[in-house]
Amino acid sequence: MASFSLLSLLGYLETALCAAALCVLIFKKQWRDYAALSCFLAVRMVSNVALTYLHYAWGHSLWSLSRDTVYSLYFYVYWATFAVEAVLTLLIVYGVFRLAMAPLKGLQTLGMLVFKWAAGISVAVALGSAFAPNVKGTALVIAAVSQLQRTQSILTLCLLLFVCFAVRPMGLSYSSRIFGVSLGLGIMSTNDLVQSAWLAFNPKMATAYNLINGVVVCVIMATWTAYFALPEPKRRLIVLPTTSPFLRWNQISQALGDSPGFVAVGGVPPDLFAPAELEVMRRASLKMVTPFPSMGERSIAASASRAI
Amino acid sequence: MKIIVRSFVIALAVTGAIATSYAKAPSAASKVTISKTSAMPVPTCAPGSGSCGMDGW
Image 1 (cartoon, chains in turn blue, yellow):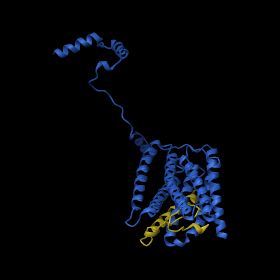
Image 2 (tube, chains in turn purple, yellow; image 1 turned 90 degrees about the vertical axis):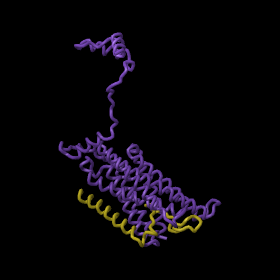
Image 3 (tube, each protein chain N blue to C red; image 1 turned 60 degrees about the vertical axis):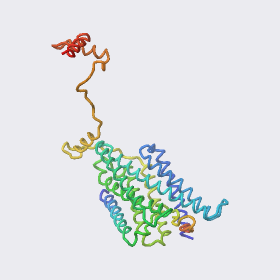
């Protein structure tokens, strides 16, 4: 009974903290920079409310639906929102990397390109590895979502390590929201991976682990709420030595992928220019040693060259 | 402060790496499962074959 009460309490607290974090994020006008995080919190809040209500309906035989039908609804809402949250977490990681690297535009562009490819290949491999000879239907859905979640957890931990060690060179501090969001995601990812190993060896202890899950998610939501509620210190001036390889790589990366300009080197007919342009060129050529030919002179010269 | 935060982050990453290697053990490969980081009950049975995990709350 105590466990029942504690789990329910944690479930309600999680929904409340999720709503608080979302409200603070919107109130502080940070939802543009952290759009994926806002969507993640909104999806989680809506799914938690729906799942709580469905669970209540399952236990109290509400509506005229059978318990099996309510369970089916619960099952699909749970796993569908889980998949959406896994994808949104990848987008949060992408957004955090973009914000962290904002001062070095060249490296940011290069890093985001590498991230897109790494994330795309990882997701494809994760979903591909869910296919097995005897895995079909809902088992396939669970396997695919689980693999996607594990891939996202590993990518998130990589980002957390990067942000942790690059936080000072990037002019940020441990009070920055970028670090706060990464820290929350990192705790969530580690918890997911530990849970995965735990449930593999102790499948009957899923409910016990739910208690840990409840505490961890409340800590994460509280962390995000605090980071967004407190004023963020401004990014420090980033000073790099002129010989810094980061500076050099940033310059090189900025030049990569630029669409090149084009120069007409020949075969340009005079009709391509407007009369005003031709007049400007003619007047400018008057100051030159060899004057620019007028329209009549040019047509005579052209017919003479054709005759030759 | 810097050392504490870095140690914590490294501990998180190492724990995640160790957990990944455990979950990939051949004995566990067929029954690895994962759930949301949430206190909500986890429905693990396919619809129509029982309602596992719902009695937790």
